[in-house]
Length: 250
Image (tube, rainbow, N blue to C red):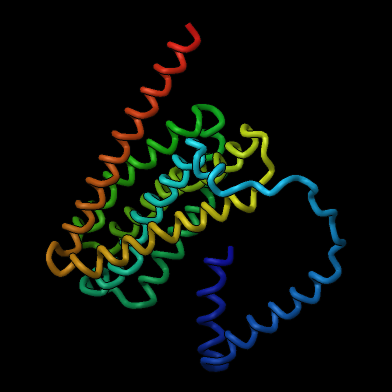
């Protein structure tokens, strides 16, 4: 909702009242929210021992989901800086580019409930792998059609694939904490944020350094190849883990 309403209302306020008004209004909303925060009853502080970062980072499930979050940010991060320029080269206006990204964000939000249902029915790892594979297939297709509407349709599918990777990974981080008998949700979601930031930074550095060499399509194909390779590694590791569990049980 924030991703959709922010650009929309910001644009309306900018046209109606000038450049500074949207920022002033948002600042005022934060001030109101800060005052309301003072009215929230204080909860009891936990009495448990603080969890060391080494304990979290040695958990295979947490590391695996952090890796998937990094991959999702890495794949999506290449779209945000490069796709608008590609669309503008095909004649799309700034407003059209904004509409395409807004519609794809709406579909991302709407896909969350049934992505959750699929994760509960088939398991988290198969859903994430499906997202990796579909993202790898769809990314190069953003550079194929020359019709802006078709590119927008592919962008919507890419955003849904992004949800297939990111949403189950973030939920599984909390599940990993529960299985380990810990309650350090804030710490594990700090790992989530760090992983996401690493993926975005890696994409920005890669795009800046190599886009002039490979071009827009070459960059998308390269990232798709990375996603496929990581998906294969994840499948092999999962198969190996199952074999180890079966041997230990027998």
